[in-house]
Length: 339
Ligand code: DAH
Image 1 (cartoon, rainbow, N blue to C red):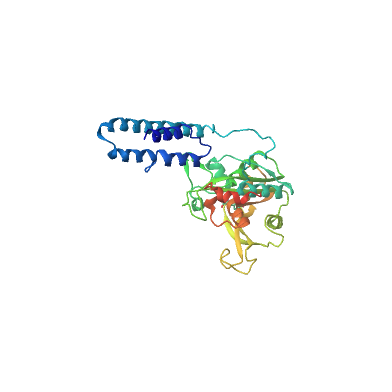
Image 2: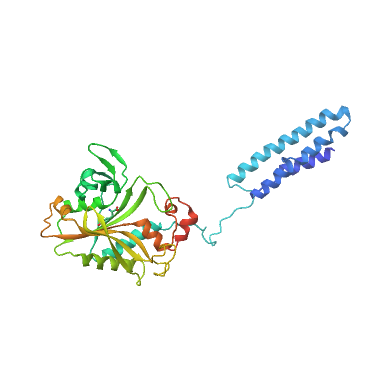
């Protein structure tokens, strides 16, 4: 019996772990539910009565030894101080590290800017917290006009009204107030609306605003510019279509559609069998907007447009749920590694 104690004790003392599998092997043998020390306890009933006490003490000692050693092994494994010989082999390939990649919304924004920079547009920005003048009034939304309800606004303060901007059109006003025509600018940014979150809508999303003001800017300039954009952003075969619409800050106004990138006009469930998908709104800058910013509307004219960056990105990459853009799921994001 004494031999048995000695051999278990030696085994514990000399046990070495290099991996978590080794540690688990140790645990199963000396600590786990059916361990070797437990077997000794079970033998207690065969031990003569006068030896029971010493036997019990010895088994308890073994048990403590096993527990203490277990703690030691855990610590040595955690500190990387395994009992395997360690050495630095400088010829080994470097440990693989994974770099992040460009977010698909960023890729779309960058592509947008690239396309428009080549035709003379710069980039401008404005604050996300806006006053009523820049978000609504200067954009020709009359006070108490139902058009204000087109966009469910998050107000921060009332009287005077301060809100999270509902669109990037507010940046048009900031640029028109501060710069002289000719103006060609693109304003990307985050916008906010009190909308229920779903696969197609979110209360926080991104828009790209475009503004061109100069002498003799016409609706055909708007059409050509957006046609050029659609071909560059999507594919050379892309067609565009304008549908009459209403925005307070443009006259005339239009919704812009592109030919469906999935079925190329044949009809599918993405385009709801129409062959067309909407990408944004546009129009000729309303003379009232120019006048609100002290630009002479008898000399200057302009066009403007606004598009959802999420929407364009969904169409570019076939993303069906815009919540994916903000959920931070690496399984989604990794699919854009090649960007
Ligand atoms: N601001 C509009 C919206 O958020 C989009 C828009 C439409 C912008 C027409 C424009 C425009 O500049 O001309 O729904």
